Image (cartoon, rainbow, N blue to C red; front, side, top):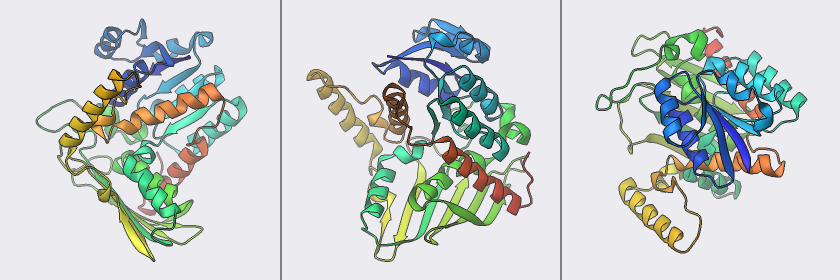
Length: 345
């Protein structure tokens, strides 16, 4: 049994908390958030120890094995440092930190502590992405020449039909570290690294449709250091879409064919959800483990990545996404910002 504390109960943090509570081999010992409403929700879900200050979760490290950190970006470095120095394994929601300097410090802290550390590069666990990677690795499209990777979403803005306030830190560059490029582009850049290995930035253009202190759109061109393959990353916060619509796709263009993520994503997500719900009912009837988020398709990877992290904690194995992976993505984002004349905050 892995004893865990969940730190930060915003949208992602609450999802991680609910996932942890549904895992048979995980015990949620404590949770923390500055929001009284979020803490009351955690209590209603069965978490006995809740704190307004996340430091209190780690004040008794002997009661924990690991923490799941989903705090605002500007608190990532401090919270991770405290957790590692307290002898705890850490799952950290992306980005690893706001700056290359902070990320390098985290890499050193992880190496010094010897603890298990994993960053939530969740898009790698999307079924369509895993199938794309398998097809690429098997030589199905020959050598990769160009990867087009894009995601356009609401960003921190809720759809008008489900209004919700946006925390001020999102639009403070010193606290957020950036806008759509850091938020959404982080995942897309990581996917290019997942397909093509380490790379360099060769072009960047930032968008400011809403005249915010941070960018609300970005196009970045990357080049693989090993193969020369190019990656075209297109991200934005400017589109009002509602779940289950999801404006995300990856197209891998090779010298012997191509692969498109839309070949693998269910055409009708409602029908898919109904089928997966019935499968879970059958699994429960025959005594098999259910897949709690399988019916959502795009959200199941959050369950899978946490399961993978806790498996590494129990088995003493290295997580598939390392602190170095998190550092490399922030290095690329910082290089893209510099190319556009934006200095790191």
